[in-house]
Length: 278
Length: 263
Image (tube, rainbow over all chains, first blue to last red; front, side, top):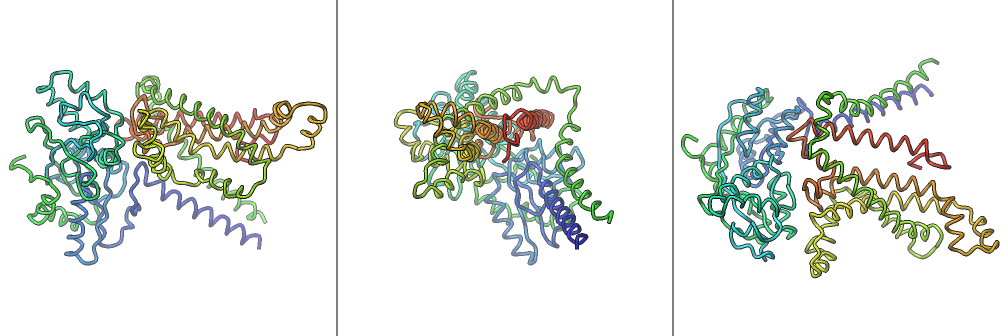
């Protein structure tokens, strides 16, 4: 009797320890998906994708599932810098779509990715809450009106935003980027957080991709375009993760994204085609 | 028969290893030759300073506002006390994300209270005050709960004697009740402080993330994971050391009681 109780105790402790260990594997990330390498059900693809791709990839994923019965596509959307760290730390992904060449290249250099291909492009816009409490009318106003939210400098959109501000220095004077930076009240971890903070009206302006003014936030936000010569063009690379257990299926999904059908969906959400040769 | 003691011992060992291993892993991954330089990085120093300041203020605010309430809850019986008690306990079990949303809905610029404050030109989100508000919200229940139990455990006949000996109720509170309940108040304050130090979710949602203003240690660790793992590890190690020292000190130092911070 005692022995049995002891074994039950041991068994439950081990189960608890294993369960906890399983959770720990999630590391810094917050994705709600099956983390256990090698335990993916047949026909499940795990796609790590830049937060800006949330809506467009959701639709592409559904299209892929429709044309591949029995296959499910799971997404982990986040800042590309976080996704890069997660893949580096061994989280299982089949595909990585980055908003930034740098993070893809870092993974390629570590031998973790197959050959990446550029699949889409994006540009930036300024957003303000619909009622525009700070009265921001142009990019120039960013230097002297309201509270600004940007993504952190390590987030691709954060880097592109700062590059756009540098470009604006040619129009508004060399001090312009510094003056704007002084009005930044928060550095968010991905572009969707910037959108949310502005849509909630907590911040007076933010810089995001043109594709982010989507769905639920459209009626809460107004956009102010950058002067075209100052805007930044972001090219997104995508690649299959080396050693993916679903490499064949993963390449098919990448091909769909590169195909006219996939490009049409991306265009619907405001993404731009990749320029020839870029 | 030997197996009977062996198996539970093994279970205990597995558990100890499981808890200790991740903590030790932090220290094993730190490059100690660069520790001095890393700890002096602006991002680390700013986060240390901000976490120190905000958690101290949050704990002080909790003690000042919480002590009378804890005393009241311990001594007075009134209809709805259970409900009030439960409401005040809520932040203990609420996910930090819920706390973050709740604070935004209340104190955000368009929130219930926030829109009133906005009329006075006060905006809380993205300020150090917002960090403190988040810390008080999630940390206060620890103090309230422990302090209430501490006050409830004070022998009321001692207070009665003090009153019959001619001391005023105020004198009785400060000379009899408070000293007797002090170990509980102290432990509660330490737990509130520790929870405030670890606060992450509500802070990043309500106060945002700005080095030197709202980027506390947990936020700085989270951000550094993607850019400077070395700095993240050093800050994590500092938090482990401080937490360990505080917990140990409470066990050793706490006057009276069993000195255990989690009664």
